[in-house]
Length: 172
Image (cartoon, rainbow, N blue to C red; front, side, top):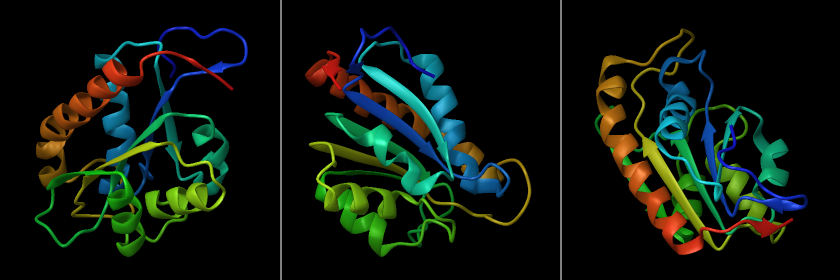
């Protein structure tokens, strides 16, 4: 899901990563948002990756980037469908102290490991959507589905600002 084209040995400076399991209702909000965002933004400075539940296997996708934007379901105790945008060290602190779901490869685990390995991009964002249902089944709950437009607008805003600031390919 890459927009634009890179030369050999170059990576897009901005990675947008959708995390979640589409077979666990609202846990699939990350991949759902990713698909919508990829349709609406076109820049060679951005790579869109559906990370699903790959977990730490995604570390190599983060390495060498200037920014990462993660789209994920995160349990915060807020009303289902609530959207939060977190930035910088707040992302790691928040994501590691909250249960996204019990799956491996949640945003906190991934970013904490990237930081430990010295591979964390200088700019990190988490677009977190409060899930209602994370049991087996396809499709988002009504509450989460209603929040998609708001979450998409917030994700677009973050990525567009990053493109303005960091928008050129970098050597891998």
